[in-house]
Image (cartoon, rainbow, N blue to C red; front, side):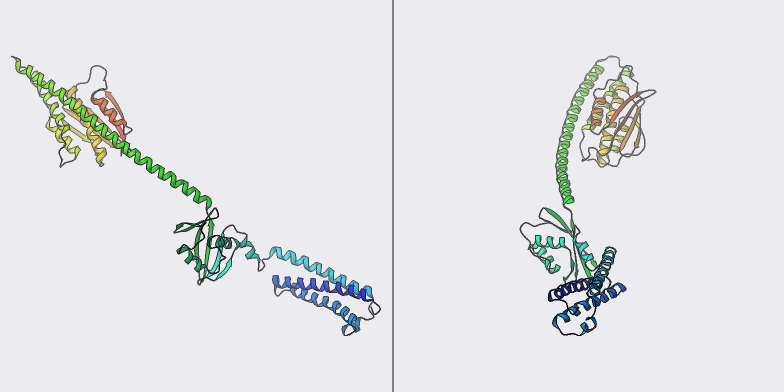
Length: 420
C-alpha cells in the first residue's frame, strides 16, 4: 500500500468514508429503535470497524503514520476485501433494522398515525400548553383563527368572544359546533388526569340531516296548526248544523204536539190510548228542550243525561265505566241522547240498556231498548243519520241490529282528531 498513487488513495479514502457514514446512519437508527440491545452494540462495533480503514488511508495521504504503521505491508486486495466485508455487514444490519421497524413502534410512529386521522386531536396541559397536535387539528385552527394552535385556552377565549375568521360560523355553543370551509366540526373536551384532550369530529353529513329534520318539523308544525284551525271550523260547522236540526225538530214536534192536543180536546170521547200518545209527544218535546239548554251544570253531562231520562219515565241501566275525557264523554252523551230520542219517539221505549267498553285506543257502546221493533227496513235518516255522520269525524262505526230487542253498536277512536 506504500506505492499507491494519490488518485488511488483518494478513491480508497472516499470509499472508506462512505462506508463509515453508512455505519453511523445504521447506528443512529438502531439507537432510536432499540436503545440498549445486542443489535445496537453490533452497530457501534461496525462504526469502529469502518473508522479504521478511513483513518489508515487518511494517514497514508498525509504522511503522519500512527495506525498506518501496522498496515504498510498489507496487500491492497486484502484492504479492499475488508471494505467489502464491512459493506456486506452493513447490508445485513440494514435488513434486520428494516424488519424490526415494521413490527416495532418508533418515537415518530404515534405522531405519524395521529396525523393521518380524519378528525382533529389535541393533547394539552391544563394551562393550555399543547403536548400533541395532529395535522387536522392544526388545519382547523388555521381555518377558524387564522393561526396554528399555541395555547388551547386562548382558542377557547377567542370562541367565547367571537374572535374568529369571517368565513367561520358558530352553529351551536353547547355542545360547540363550528362550520368552516364547507365542513361542520363538533368540538369535545375530555379530561385525563393532568392532561386535557380536545377532539374535533367531522359531522358535516349529520348536521345536514339535522337541518333537514328541522325543516320537516317546522313544516309539520305549520300543517298541524292549519289542521287544528280546520278542525275548529269543522266543529263549529257541525255545532251550527246540529243547532239548526234541533230547531227544526223542536218546531216540527211542537207543531205535531199542538195539532194532536187540539184534536184531543175536540174529541167527544177520549180513550186512554189517546192520552198515552199525547203524553209521549210532550215527553219528546221536553227532551228536545233539554238538548237546547246550555246553562251551566253542576253535574257532569253523563249524570245530567241519566237524570233527564228518569224525569221522562225511562229507566236507564248502565254497565261499564264512562270515559273520563270531557270531549269523549260529550260525544258519548250526544250519541246516547240521540238513541234515547229515537227509542222514545219511534219505539215508545220504557227501558234502555247501555254497555260501555274501553278498548284502549277505541271505545265501544251498545244500546238496547224495549221499544217496539220496526216492521220494515230501518231507514237511516234523522237521528241515525246524524249519529253516523258524527261518528265519521272520529273514525267511528254504527251498526243496527233487530233481534229480540232493538240494538245499536257504536265504536270510535278516543281523543278525537290527532296531530300528525
